Image (tube, rainbow, N blue to C red; front, side, top):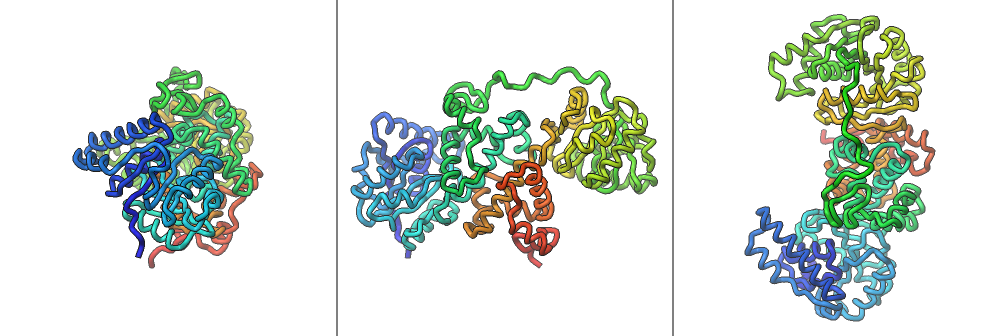
Length: 592
């Protein structure tokens, strides 16, 4: 039977430490909260007070419960106050030398049976444990910020942590209302090992001028449903903290280049641009500590005037569901649409498919019957590309095959009027290869509608080195008319969303392949610890493992970075025909 920890000490009362104090006190545990100076102690007490007062104001905590919570907390300066507690958790800065000295002192002060825990997010728990004479009673208990809200706790056992200590801490997590994931002592554990590779990749995009900070953040929020974009999140975490976590993971984790801190990150830290806490990071804030972003020199200028030759007629070329959805989207937005494809010779049949797309994918709650009829009335159907001669914009929606798209766009370019914009919806192919096949590459742009069959209002506008500024402006104006948010990026594998998303998914597969954590633990870690809407393995099964493999191969083929090589396990599952939800078996099996 697991022991019950009745008194807990917390060392370090910054944002995280004060949050951990609140978690325990909310659950009825007596807490001794310790700092090294009176001023630091006062700041920690004030942090706890602000947090609980906010909870009362929002109706999440009764005033009487708040007062009882504070009554369970004893504030003290100095470690000697911890001599009688059952468990100590440290939340001091992420410096190994500091934590080792602290644990040596705790070993001397605390009762022999007391458990000593570190809240480190990246340092070696083993190296901290051996600074004591009781390494079998040392464990990692990694809370996520804000600790009172986030449900996940990573329980990190070393090779010498006693089994009963692990069991007792797991039971404690349940008592606190947390979901625990028990893992071994590896750089970054689960959540940070996956999160920070993705964050670092986003920094390299900014560093290379591939896309703006705003477009990267908007793309990941809208394209993946994340609570924050990667650069805004790094500002919240702190760029100095992010650098230290990445550097530690790089040195301890086999020197994976995905975790080698981007040079821009080091430069910003050196310059004192640390994020919200300093008032400047990737964004500029109202004041140090504020989360309110204010304009700065890198803030995009307001949208200019609309193009002098606005788009009135849109051609859509293709067949099948993707083409039907695009026809529906443009017609519902008020454009005259010329739909060209082998199945568009019969307006009755094609119109029924587009009506279904209007009802299911465009705006079922906003289109009246009259609006639907008007949208259908704006569509002209044809099987011949010559019908596109007067279109201002032509969008292809055929299979993502390089030869097929090149041949189609060359055919379309030959019949379209001068100045017509030619757009490809490819999600993976090089847009420049398609553009050069037209003989008029200045007119070609990528229009990747992320999840076109859903309400996700995101379009990645992909400009090649030949795309004219006027064509990009036209694409922006069209996206605005469609009610979608446009982000602009250069022509590189994966664009923004897939280039950041799929390496993260591939990293998760590598983690599973290494036997470090199971699919459920990894999915729990990313959902509950990082606020992701779905875990990586559930997402891979939904997307399709063959799709993920194809994207990852494309990224690796272009970047040639070993960190982007597809995980062998992913390749093996695809070879075996385990493609995810649509085959009933991927990383998980669907119930029969």
